[in-house]
Picture 1 (cartoon, one colour):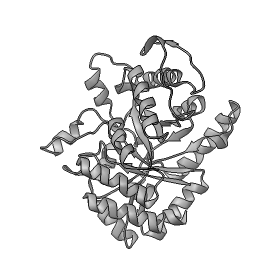
Picture 2: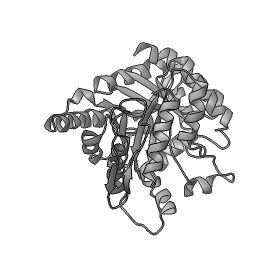
Picture 3: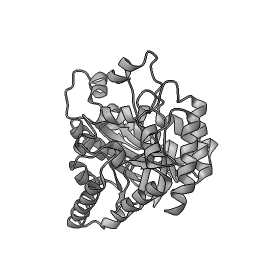
Picture 4: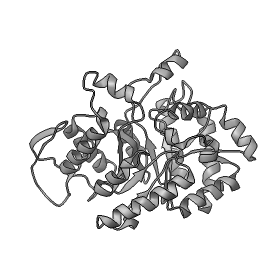
Length: 338
């Protein structure tokens, strides 16, 4: 099982307090992840501050662009891979520029890029960027994935391509060089069942967030059925959910500390959007909260349910040092035993 860590590119005010994500902190967290043996780091993508964050904090958060951040980190690391968890395609409408950025980053990182895409957790961000459009973001995502993968193509072919869609258009584009990897791994993010169909059609992996164990097990079974029906090998599709982590000396200590963090407030805010399907199950009963032994048991249960990659684990913490301490604790007590 692959294990990756979340990188706080766009998490101030959401899952961490303000200030938190100084550039030096972001670099330090990535270097710490590489030293501890994490497979990759995954940063999220925001363009503007959410209304509830503005109401809570007098100082605006700093949201760093993940692709520019990775361009810097690629030069500071040697083996760590970089993933977008997720790149919000409905906010990035110049798809040719996005493709050029991805191909460039893949070359300059030595082929260490992975790409997660989705509609984004907050409709209000899309409405701020495209206030008069009123479009369904799912349709933009579908078209964006097709437009992007058409541009990136295969590294062993030279072909000019044209795409004519409702939301994306380009004509006679020869995007060179293609990415260094023959194929940049592509994940579709989102908990809604329609994302399973997107995964089977276009992607290498499924990237949901905070799903209960029973739901993961049922959705993995459904995904495998869809893959087999379409002629794909179900084993070729990564199951890569994101979870929140907080370790304590006991379950009670971990839960008590977790409930005081900005991460807990953030999950509560998502109960009306991304996490609305989890119902009345407590956040600490879904995520990896508890002692090292308890979290290891939960991680093993997820693996047994079909999870192949604990992708972009987000550690609940009140300071960068607590974040680094949690990363190390998890690496030593859980990751080393998976």
